[in-house]
Image (cartoon, rainbow, N blue to C red):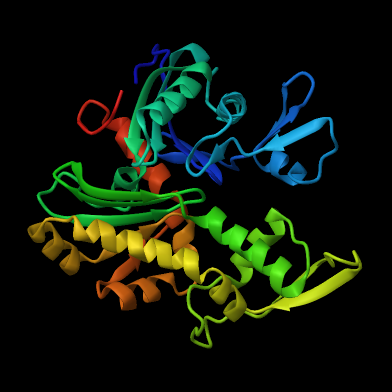
Length: 341
């Protein structure tokens, strides 16, 4: 980039749970995808961590929302406001010229034309003048160091907050893919429903997420050194409204999220079913890579390996794989033919 260039390059992983912005190979913004707005004026009051602290704690004049659901934009105006707020957080050595932003944005591989148009429009309204889109599994593969343009099959399973993206990549393209709207948010909802039904206690979405992080597991039996201690939950009794204190074990959580994890297993098998034999042989040899926040679920790699009989590897930094890949794609916008304009 020349000294007098007015173009600022940023890469965005626009996720259901978190939005990450990278610039010059560095993660400069890593914030929850939450925005708080004044209900009357519709003006943004807070974004990211600040807005998440207000989430589920506001009065009637403040609206806190997550603009993305199931990996796609659910509230166009809120998404635009959120993107503007997060882009303003980018610290640069000089003024950030909003009229000359070049962006590469990660999107779910199962997105429809309408959903892709919504992302592009939001980016343009937030100041993007040159907007490229990249499918998240492709970005994740680049981010973990796979040579996506090699004549070799690699499979990536990216489990985010709103969607799970499964793709077989070869020669710079996606050969077969499967995108399902079952991911981290569904596991959180399963835990909420289980706590209500089994323990008669009301828990918020945020509390259910804390349970998932602290004692979430895909296996009913974990090795002793990896088994977490029970997590104590406080909440009101659904019937009497009296306070309850419940100790939740990882075995309970494994049982309650079992059906959602099974759907991810089925989706992986479906993508493998549509994979050409030569690429299938490469995948068996190379293994399958797990990325996204869902890859951090205890025992998930072992459960999938046992079920599918192909080794599953957790990426080194699964939460930032897509963001890093998007940043690399940004530097190669003229070389990567799979970027969409």
